[in-house]
Image 1: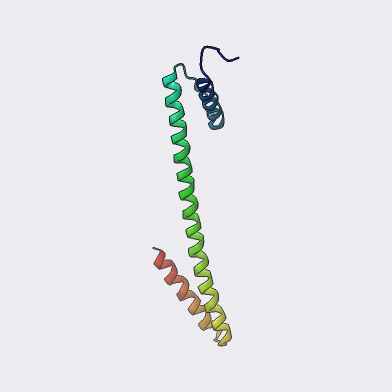
Image 2: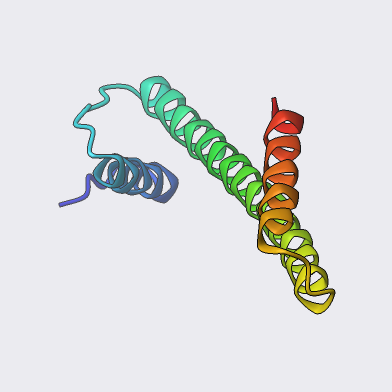
Length: 108
């Protein structure tokens, strides 16, 4: 199974390399220690870059949700004030329409 003349670290790196390739679903075999070392470095770097990209995407989606929730809270406050003041329905629609238009223009 393992070649006796090669050291433990070589076999450890080889197993790590093949497990990373299995995870990434790529089938590339190395022939020399230099190729093995370079591929391990590239796999680790690509995993780090992948984590950074997904982390940034997650942060951006959370910021969008926070902005949307803040706007909805303000809109709910305006609706409750208008309901407590017993404003006419036409005026309520105009106020809501104005708020929605100014909000959408601010995002442009």
